[in-house]
Image (tube, rainbow, N blue to C red; front, side, top):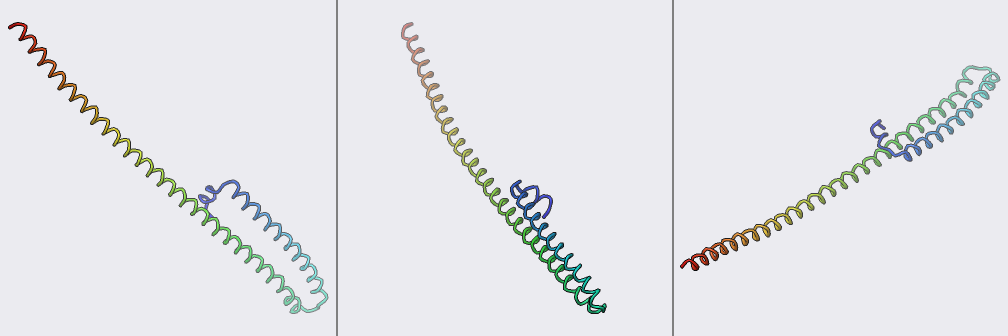
Length: 151
C-alpha cells in the first residue's frame, strides 16, 4: 500500500489495520516462542541422537514450519492490501460521482437563472418600450393641445 493510499484512510481504518498487525505480531511471537522451545527440545534430541544426519532431519521440520508461517504472513498482507485498494477505489468512485452530481446541479441552476434573467429582461424591455411610446404619445398630445390654444 502506498503512502498516498495510507493517507486517504480514516483513523478508524488505520487503527483497524494496526490492531490486525498487532494481533498477527503477537501470534507470530507466540509461534516463535513455541518454535524456540521446540528448537531447545531438538537440541536436546540432537545431543541424544548422536548423529548429525539425524539431527538435520529433525531440524528440517522447524524450518518448514517457519517458512510456512512467513508465507502465511505475506499472503495476509497481500490480502489486506488488495482489500484496502478496493475500498480506496470505491471511495474514489463515489467521490467522482458526487462531484459530477454537484456539477450537474450547478449547471442546471445556472440554466434556470439565465432563463429567468432573460425572461425578466424581456419583460423590462417591453415595459420600457411601452413607456417610451406612452411618452411620445403624451408629447404629441401636449404639442397638439398647445397648437389648439394658439389657434
